[in-house]
Length: 195
Image (cartoon, rainbow, N blue to C red; front, top):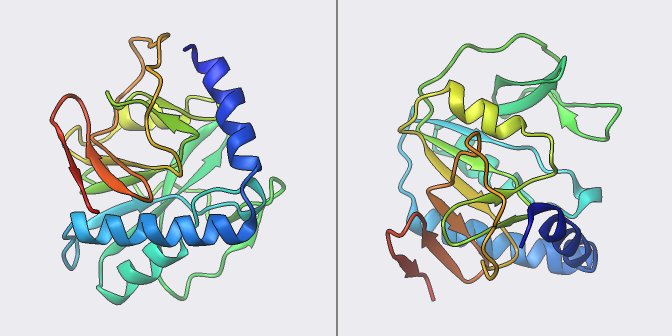
């Protein structure tokens, strides 16, 4: 299927989830992530701040776990049409933007490129790691500018079914997809189920 069709289909699926379902599924995704990825103190993790109104996977459990384990946390922010990274701590105040996204106040990129893991928002990803986002291309550009060995992990309420047909040369695939039922190693590397 084409990205536009998948985007429409999975936006509708996501919007049909209740707040309780989103919280329950997000917790299962978090538990699967923690069981699969053994992150250590001072490793650098880039993690999106979820927008509850959009029914996104809730990343608050991820962030709390990283803070508790002294993992360095960086979050994305769109400034002048570009995704930049800002480091945050448990005490960093977050301000709600015009788009309803809670984000740190600064507008200057931290300059870090050697992330160990990037937790990536998406609407859908197929079994080859091709992701369908909101269509702005922020993450593909971001991935092309950082350490190529960073583990790119998508989090999704839905397993991969359809193949994304219209891949471009600028699309950067994910390494893993974490769903409520499993952790999939993508790019043909096989999968491991956490059930």
